Image 1 (cartoon, helix red, strand yellow):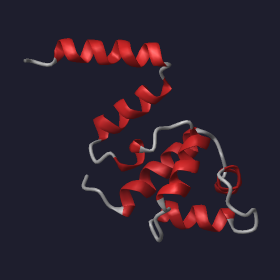
Image 2 (cartoon, one colour):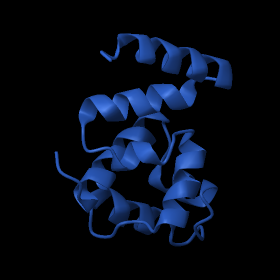
Image 3 (cartoon, helix red, strand yellow):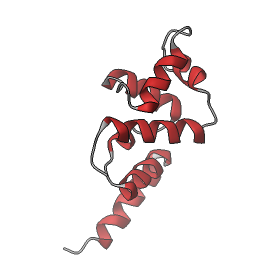
Length: 105
């Protein structure tokens, strides 16, 4: 899948549904005005508009995901980014160490 606003839209919707949040609740939690939160989130999820980097960063924080997840073109990479973001620093370092051992030098 090549990068496009549809990619961000797809990942955003999947992450919101996984977090069991409504569009309105996610938007409000990310700092969007409560009266337009649902409509704006809907526009982001349908690909009509793409959130600017600051807004997407706020959304990512609410969803507890690295912002890179929304831009990952490869599905496996997106999964890895999501998993990596859920690890504490010790777990992240352990995963990096294991990956370094797997990589053929």
